[in-house]
Image 1 (cartoon, rainbow, N blue to C red):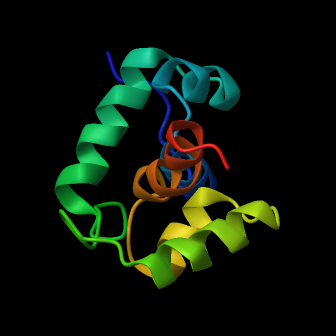
Image 2 (cartoon, rainbow, N blue to C red):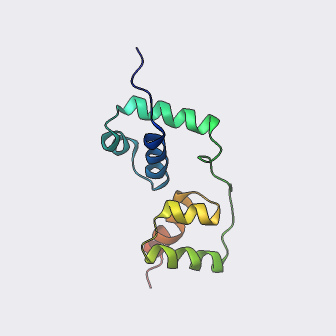
Length: 106
């Protein structure tokens, strides 16, 4: 049995929430979809949507790029938006600006 078709708005929201690092169960709840439906759509997007996959893999961040990401994040810009601007994933941005700050408090 197939569920209802995904709208372009839902797919965009899924991508943004996923890039922002929301857990899949939370995404499903916010979209009013089942967990299985969200997982299936993520698998589909990963296979067929170039905008969803990360542009850079194992990129080495330099201090200037890290500082730029930190400033944008501190000003309230979402990690997904920063990632799009820098050509990396929201998870990579989060790891550089939030996790690094926790590991090395100033």
